[in-house]
Image (cartoon, rainbow, N blue to C red; front, side, top):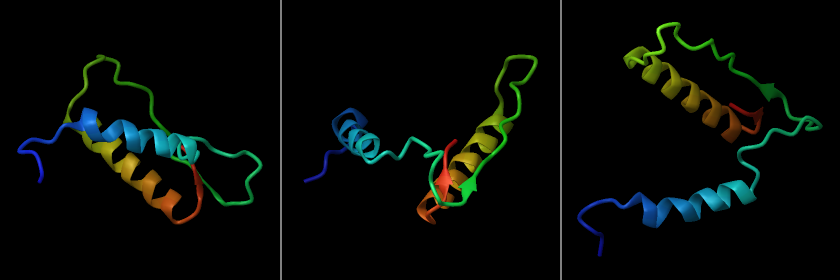
Length: 76
């Protein structure tokens, strides 16, 4: 039976550890795969984040994950 509320502390550490063991968060400079890169702009000079930042980072995350699943050597 599922709990009424989602408890990330009970679920996510196990998945995150498996991703780290699989090397999901590391690029291989000697890989023969075609690299994929997203240029990250410098932070806003005001230092405050806004919805544009959240949308931009979300899209970057989606693109990196998508290209990694397609077999490219992607690191964000």
